[in-house]
Amino acid sequence: MLVPAPRSPLSGAGAVGVGFRPELAADLLSAPGAVDFVEVVAEACFASPAARREASAIARIWPVVPHGVKLSLGSASGIDMDRARRLGALCRELSAPVVSEHVAFVRGGGREIGHLTALPYTLEAARAVARNVAAARRALPDIPLLLENAACTLRFPGDALGEGDFYAEVVARTGCDLLLDVGNVYANAVNAGVDPGELLGSYPLERVAMVHIAGGVVEHGFYFDTHAHPVPAPVFELLAQVVARTGPLPILLERDGDFPPFAALAAEIATAREIARSAPSRPTLTRPRLAGPTPAEPTLAPTRPGLGLALPTRPGLPASRAALLYNSTDASPSEASALAEVQARVAELLTSPVDPPPEAVAPFDAEDVARSRAILQRKRVDDALPLLPRLSSHREAAARLGARCVEASPRAPSRTAVADALRIAAAAVDDARLAPEAIVDRLLLRARFVGPSGDGSVRPRLLPFIRRERLPGGRVVWAIKGIGSSAEVRLIEPRR
Image (cartoon, rainbow, N blue to C red; front, side, top):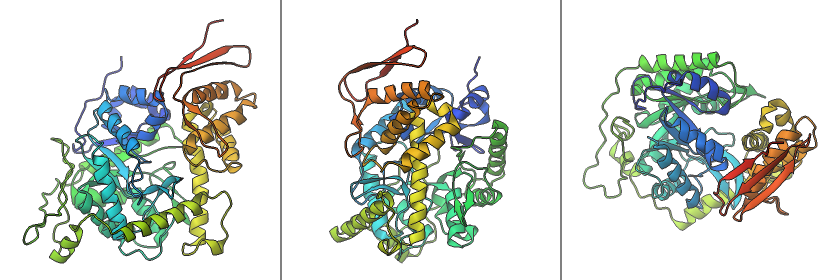
């Protein structure tokens, strides 16, 4: 009989978790004490009712942290409030102790980029994040919202702030603490040619409430934070530097692909736990106060007893710097418009069907744009395959087929992953090895979505759906859905 792991607050000394993935499920469920908590990707739960049911089930074993990747907190045009409400509903359903999202944008000028794109390091961008966090807060439950620093594949010319100072602005303006991805810090430092320890030290480490670690690889002289390789020693060294200054923090290992035997991941978890437990007790930090009233000072994110997640801002700041940090979140219309135009331009460069010529990408670096476009193509496959769980059991064949499909198809204007998954399933139906699984996956997607239309887009299916498919060998399967986009889809396989 499966014995649940002891439930512990995330702030417990040495608390270490892992991103819950189907490839890890059997090993984690057979040894639930291997981790103290797990993280689930919120969008995976939105896209797959099965993934949502699984998340609800594992919430009975571990604390579950929903991790968002598509809220686009950095978009100058604002966030999708329906998505925020769905994120809030998921948090309540899972009794989540905390929720996290990225300081990045995934939409610009009405275009879906399909990947987390770092913001320019400017006050205007920090104000945009603050406005969007305030809007999202109205839809989220009364739990801490943590903001994750992003990896940069595309640098904006003329950044007004250093990377660490930008995140100091963000936490001060939003009242949220950081989910510090030290793998992203390492990647940004290596790719910018600066010392990782120095870059780490520029961050507001006293506002870090949780840490991510992950592996990466160098390709063509550029370090990619892939989440598909072992955590390198320098990232563990950065982790040790963080907890030496902050005290013990919850640490989460991210692994999204090329899964090794679980013993290898267990060794990385053990290393992280040892680093966390060797950290000194967390220091008590005091918040700098300005002389006189500070009416625009942001309110700290709410806390839960025992989580220790809402921390004060940077100690020792001069009054002039503190005044800058606590100024209004409002931006002038011209500032917001300028940021929106820049983001629309970036979205166009990264998603246009035809590679832009080097002279057309100015003022951005042509190599950065080309690299980011290549990452997006790879990311499309990574996003689509989880929507095809049966087909994905043929891991390598499905990945190769997926790469060919996305290369031959322009990005859909919205719900790109669903549109790509339908294309991949359609192509797989013509392969005798893949057809049985592809037919069922495609049937389930068709039950929940309509399309693709002429521009490649799909939309949720609101009306009831009932259809059957005949598999190779003569077996028949039915998919049935009721009224509404969120209605459950039932798969029926009559006995012969």
